[in-house]
Image 1: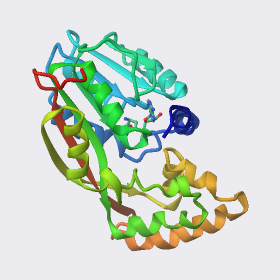
Image 2: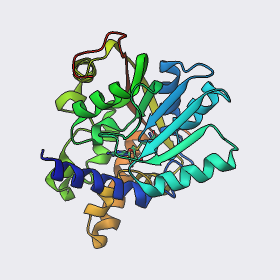
Image 3: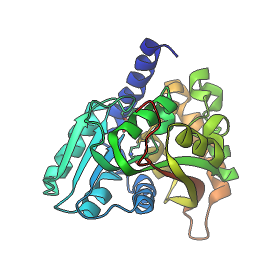
Length: 286
Ligand SMILES: C[S@@+](CC[C@H](N)C(=O)[O-])C[C@H]1O[C@@H](n2cnc3c(N)ncnc32)[C@H](O)[C@@H]1O
């Protein structure tokens, strides 16, 4: 992908997240935060460390990092969507966090000092980037020798969730059918695919931990609100307004397969945590 096309693609992604910044991760459905907290635990930040949260969004990983590194540490959160950064910066102030910086920057090549972080995380971000390998090399450079990287990406979903999401498929243009985020092909389709990306960027001790994350909706309306509040907004946007009611009805029908005895709906997704270390002896491009 040429640099102009890549920049346009990233700008389109950021524009979607700008539009959802006010509702993102705040419609009463725990999802991004539990995933990010597992990721942060996997890279084990210690008091006093300098942490980077790439694609921080509304701070799902940032708050956990800030708590772990404490008042003697520091956390930088970056995101390409200015509305995400504005909202998260306001929340950092409300939380009284003085050791957190938030910057608008492209994760593809952040303009930050080399070797200035002890750890970096990117929760549910890498698959959005036009050139994930180049981004990983850039993050490698930002880490001090011995610094740790942690990524979360998606594995498979349960059958009910796949069928639910398929309500959008007939409306999606080819670029939204790119399955990177849902991980059915390419490097994001397997643990080894993501591990190879990370290892090829110069990281060592690369390993994967996976877990199953459930999401529960109290009713169909909560599913609609939730799907509208994050990146899936692009799927709703692809549906002509006069067909929204049809898609909602089809979604309600398919959610029945996930109904629990208490009347709520539960879907499950495998989440992959991939971690690696910048070796003390660096590869030749750094
Ligand atoms: C699915 S959200 C994850 C946010 C957060 N890490 C979390 O776990 O809730 C993806 C985030 O990546 C950001 N993003 C996408 N492409 C980016 C890029 N090229 N540079 C920086 N941020 C980017 C989006 O704006 C969005 O906030």
